[in-house]
Structure formats: C-alpha cells, structure tokens
Amino acid sequence: MTIAPPASPYQTLDPPTVAYRSTVRSMSLIFGVLMDLVVAGSIVVSWYVATSPSDRPESVRRGLLIFSAAFLIAWLFLSMTFFLSLRYL
Image: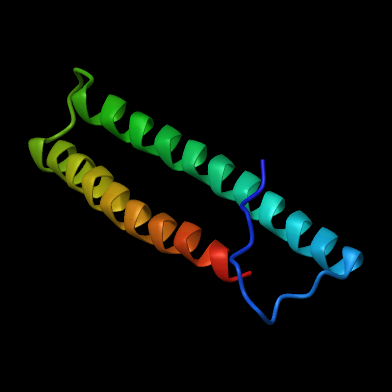
C-alpha cells in the first residue's frame, strides 16, 4: 500500500523516479506502523507494571502512568506530523 503522489505540474513521470518515490513511501509507512506497535507495547508494559499489585510506592506508580500518558500524546503528535509530511515526498 503506497500513498498516491500529489498532483503537481512539476512532477516527473520518469519511471525510475516514480519507483524510487514509491519505495520511499512504502518503507516509511512500514517504519511508521512498526514504530507505532513498539510504542503501544511500551505503554502496555508501563501500564501493567504501574497497575500490578506489588510493594512499589505510590509515587512510582503515578510516575509510570504519567510517563505513559505523556509519551503516548507526544508520539501521536509526532507520528501525525510524520504521516502528514509523506505527501510531500
């Protein structure tokens, strides 16, 4: 699955250039999806450690929950800007 290039009067129709852009777009998409899965896994582990019954202090639990929430918000913002910039490739 590749992202369609934007319509532009300056766009080249040279087959090697089009193939290169398609390759870059597909590799970027695969990278973004895999990184999203890794981030989701780290957030799941953080939530599991924070909510599991143990002898950890309450400040550690709150810190893990705040970290996972802030990390998720930052990652969503960064990935949104990354995927929106793909149309300029």
